Image (cartoon, rainbow, N blue to C red; front, side, top):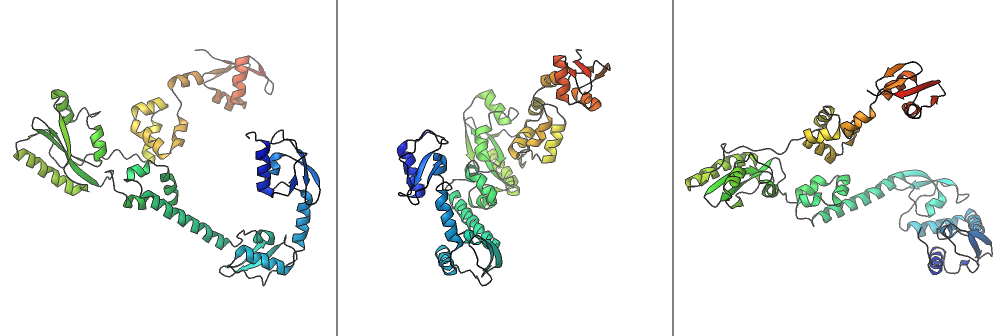
Length: 393
């Protein structure tokens, strides 16, 4: 805890307990956990307490606390009803079955909406909701209020992709309103059931027409890695400048397939040279949909993280993105780690060689770390009176 000045400490005590509650003239401030002498101005009781305890509402004069508890025990029924009205206001509880003897007892109270429940009367006067159904309604009201705030906040985003990258997305996911927000916000094209038609128009009258589910990503990534793409090969060969045109809005996949052929024929009739190798109408991919089962199959085929990333990068990305980290627990960092850790071990006493520490542990009943320590230090295992060593191949 950060060190505080005398003035800050006295201000905190005043805020917590009031201005004329304690005399701090004899209190020596050394640290948050070092006790000092405090005098209660109400009853004159002198006691030792730390700054941390004194600035906490639970800390204070014990003599005053016991006196207040005695007062609460002897609280009259009329005073109890008056305090209850002050606490709950217009909400009326039925105390017809309450057998009042002390404020510290658990008694039966009747909720006018949901029926009887049991609660400590002191907690009842503090405003704590004892009726479980009322408590559920209270939290549901707060939940619904938060949900409405999330929906209102989501309108500040330009599109769903931008919303998904924000911190509020996690809260919305917990409240189960992501699909509702997805309907409210415009899509950036990340819809596997809809496509838009685009064209790459080169200055020398060559054109490539295609379909995409995400035009923004298409603009960024077309000429970065797709070396087999006919438009990329043409650009690499000629170096001619080009411009990207979005020819349609996002329409259904079936409509897009028909319209793509129409656009290709339209460009051809105008004298453009078509770069498309295949006929139009191909929807292209939305990306491999890696299910949890497919990812597990991919993990089972490899032994290390490096092999998984190199052989199946998309599966590895899906595991990280979807939080299926438990699949990676069976993998190790690299092959060198395996060669280093999985070593043969021999029991010198019995002259039996085991292929691994685990096998030796299962056969001898000794913990694997204990066998390893004995093999490294050359020490004797006292429980089984055996010696161990690693086998160098």
